[in-house]
Length: 220
Image 1 (cartoon, rainbow, N blue to C red):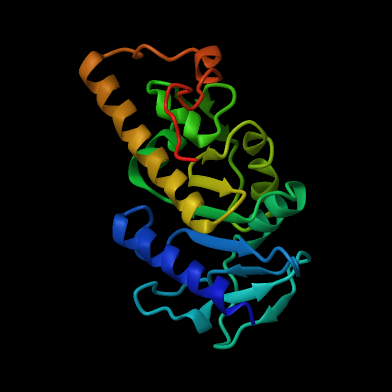
Image 2: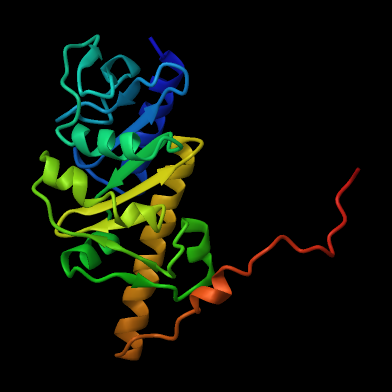
């Protein structure tokens, strides 16, 4: 069932581990099938280096397990994934990571401002990466905490927890956003360390002005 999507979840989860976005058994990933609405999601407590596509669990929008070939349970943060999907019908993929720099700012409950123009690629429509208030992992409180921040950005920090990234097309793109977020958090950390104060920021109005250069003539 949904074998192609399972393979994509597996590949992205292992890539996240290799790149340091979430080491060991932390973090979780999912994709929603456009036709059936079923969700392929990583299992709880599994070593990603040893994980196979058969370990990826299929659940429905009511958190009912539809398929788990190897008997593993879906991640304990399944409710968070479902809350995002149920509130945002256009979202097709979610990456939840525990990367070090992003999580450091999440611990401080400190949003990341637009210190570089690339924040626009993260869908940060208000000109910063928001922070979702604390919610105990695995609870409805955590699931609900990320909904408001994800209405103004495609990425958010999760207080005392980690980060989350969403995308309308693929898990690969959601993971890429999580990677950009970690780079942004690292740059912010270094500018604070070097400068000793808040760095200059790109105004939100400026971020909204980006457009592909009209001077470039594309091949017909």
